[in-house]
Length: 372
Image (cartoon, rainbow, N blue to C red; front, side, top):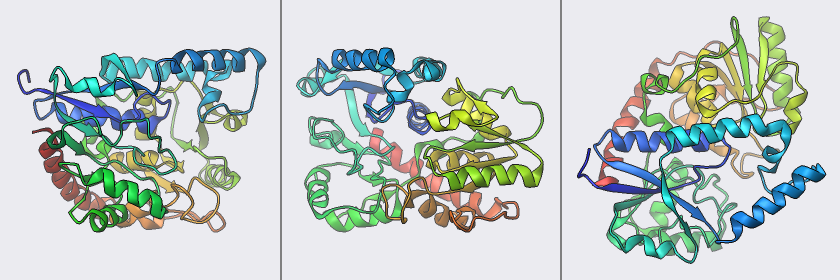
């Protein structure tokens, strides 16, 4: 492995989100299998940001404020301390990150010592128009042109404004190798910049279930169970999960991802990403509105029901991405309508995994191009 060079990776790898950390882990693992070293660049928008956030967190914690300061602010309350610690534990053990922290005013110095042979913007919603921040280095503006690569970044939505398309056209035209996680957005970007933007798999799907078994923990649950992994707050999904439990006679266990979900009878807290993988692996059924929750059901061939996360139609924010991928694998019947959800026959995974294996080979080949 030594002597092949080190790859610098950029994506959201520290947020307390199972999908974010697991795709970050998977991308490093896939690159290491090629014989390369890789690490995520530790980045903050401003040098004083960490101090400011610490002050805000302290105020929120001591005053017990419930209004959100940022998307994950509830993780800074005592009720979520064990879960946040589980994420931190996983990150320390499994996500290699640069010791040096870069900021918006120092990121360009990263190229001065030639430590990294290539730069890759990774997966997750790195190019989402809803999360765009000009200070973030997710378009690799600082890097030399031949070293700019993109592996499976997501726009998170198909609802892209004309103004954001113009920004994408300007930024992405300077990339060496380009890919995107969504098929429809790969086609849109290809047309936009006049060259192929390869549609590739999310990094989690580059690893086999045997590779995921290496980090998966065994749940402390006796017997069969239904796992509810719900990121949003729609009551229709909760109602369906409880109904499935009544129909099957199985207990429904809820991973607590939001304060709202603390009120369920069987709750799971202090769950790290490795625990999450084990919970999905051993579940009899999974009910989820999560893209990565759906992917891990497919990896482990678990029976699942998928829902949209946001209220409103399929064009609302990231609603479409689960259904679009399920259509690719011909599993779209597993996607449920909020108002007409119903129980289904078990999934026959033979055809979908045949499709997945073909896509995996193409995606691995593309990733190799990005690191070589």
